[in-house]
Image (cartoon, rainbow, N blue to C red; front, top):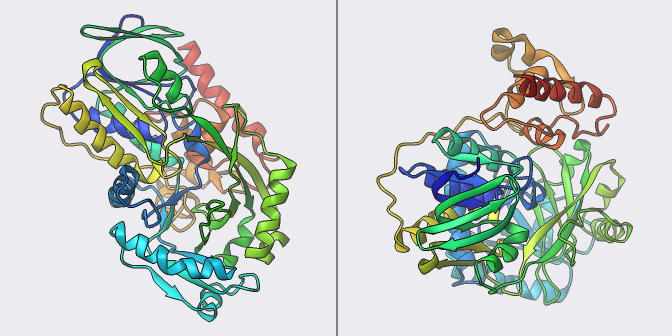
Length: 463
């Protein structure tokens, strides 16, 4: 790939970078998306809390507020067309202290200032009517009916698939080691050679500040903020009908309980500022804190089996808002400081970046029609392949279950291994199919799943 030349190159194949690639690939441009990892969505994006935000609690007037509000509508529409599972569960901010109860009207006013007018203040009795398993002591709540849950894994894969089908180059396992600006663009140095591009976009997430400094800027510093979470067994799903949000205080947003589109219930996250951008391990102290908080919010949840624990790192900066800046004289756009709301805002961020590029002088040309790919369904609220007689009749592989915990079929695994953006790692295969993510954590199906993955990758190497 040494010496390849592009009109625009995006560094970072998370949900934001893939959204930008999808948007730009619809135009008559030669575009590339590069990432150091072996798969799209491998960094911050894979450990998102998976909430489709309305933006009701964003700071009014900020770029984040505007893009989350716009992104919510864009992503709901896109998800419906692409088959990305979304459930409009609604959320309830539950007040457990008088201070939190007194803060609820101001939160409703804040939502209205953000253009969201559907919140509803409810009494303690109504809280328990809507969520009968809540712990004792709730003093009231604020309902946000349009908050929802989404699959954070399928979303960047769908974006990347659409970008690749439109002609964008996806270059994984390609770590950027330096950038040399020039009069006509940039030389991007990677572990696999040099790429040339007229315009450069930095969507590198946790490493966005490092890329920014390669271009001579130091407007922000990323401090990785670890969020640990506990995922409870599917039998716990009836305990939580809504996303149960804490009332933000001066001490932060706190811990939430949320159902997932996969049929589980999630508790978390913690918020720990670290120095290490690779510290995605869980800690005994973090999990103990979550269990203590969870016991107060939904006591019966702590009696359920734990399926998994995981931790993700958010790209927090010293600024309260997104750090999206165009440096027109350098033909360079920074997309930094995108925290967990970046999933919801992703398509709106892509729109915004496209506008900045046009203002910086990139001739976009007329966009082509682009149809979202129809993605495999991973959500429990929608028919899965093993339940569909029509699919099984046409191809018996969809009736042959390999992963029994998550009811993943041989046909789904085969499709993921031969897709436009194929799975090439165990984690990538899990995120495309849910295989090995269940309560046995690959104890029973792991060997067969690995064999299928190795057969596909060995065949490629020998081709």
